[in-house]
Length: 247
Image 1 (tube, one colour):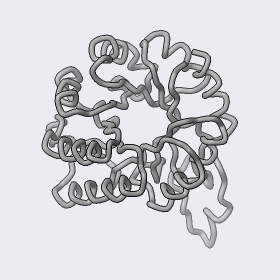
Image 2: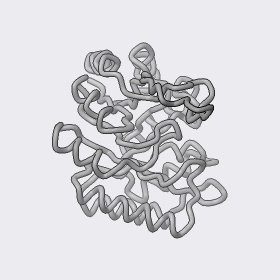
Image 3: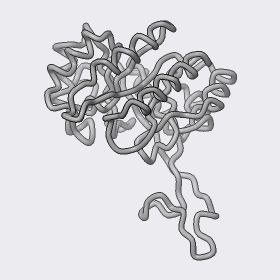
């Protein structure tokens, strides 16, 4: 059996994941921006009404992952609040201006999360680092529990070779979690080619808000999606979990 993690952008997404049979989620807001820090209420409702393991994203804004001191302070404060409210772990990423691991900030976050016996997950900021081998060794030395990665590519299917190599070389020291573009249709092939023990999927579909356009105003967040917004679909979670349970 392969562990399946579902990427969620709301409490409603978490419920769909739970009803679809998932056991672990990454809880975010603003998935259209790649995922930002979730609201406290979305975590509280998820923990009160499901038995999901919840890894909360800590990301204060879009763009990259080189943060100033104010941003870092807020990220650590947000992480503490979420861990105080029963988050099971934190997904985060700190880079320096040269796209290397920000060791000091990463250590502070790992130490904070581990003080609650939680899981410290370094997200796809890893995919922006110049040297994946020295970077993963740094993260291992800092005590990071897991890395979310697409093998330094846009999609996991393009990064299979690196993911396979990282799993073979470092999989006994740190968990390798492939994510980006994994579906029930391609997960079996990805698992067989990489040897990973867990996978991350959005199981994404779209809802529609009819008030996106009115009075000649346009509140669409991308021109190609129009009045649509991203959401987790329960039936896609079921298909994905059923597939991973049989691998």
